[in-house]
Image (cartoon, rainbow, N blue to C red; front, side, top):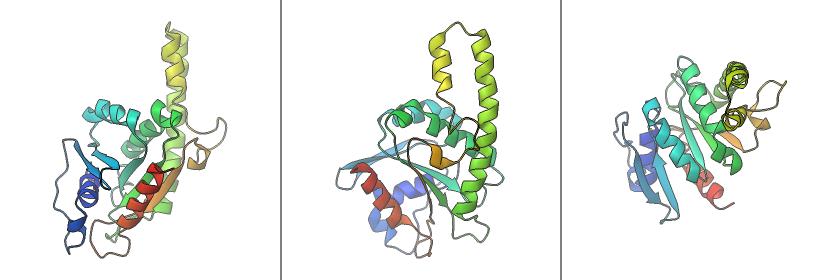
Length: 206
């Protein structure tokens, strides 16, 4: 939470605001925001990162044609476990995998001097997800030993990301994952908002 998802949603939803010298003022969102953009050609949904919205997130992923996953580049080292777990759930989602849904990991708050570059964030997430694979695989093995429901075991088996026996890297996934940088501070060199808009447009028209 607090990574800047709602600020990004406001920038994309209200482009006129982005032309001003100040970013939209938002608070950590505890509600889903949704609206059309790009003259109605896209439907942009902002789902809070809190775990209580997990069902809503999974519901939205069923119809998603592209996913923007926003990361707080300043706090990511502190929150790496929770961030990696949430990203893992998104990447392992059955609909995301079946539809080969493109994912943009947006490393936000690059205007802050303490922000980590997207290359470093990518490395940290790969390392953390590699560790998560082991613990989740152990849970699957336990489920296979005790479960009578083959469907449940098969569903969990789809949770494994990457190539078995090889260190996890995003390039091994069946759907494209791209890392970009952004800042909600207008005029900052790493703003990246135009690149986000372009990525969304290209993802929806491929």
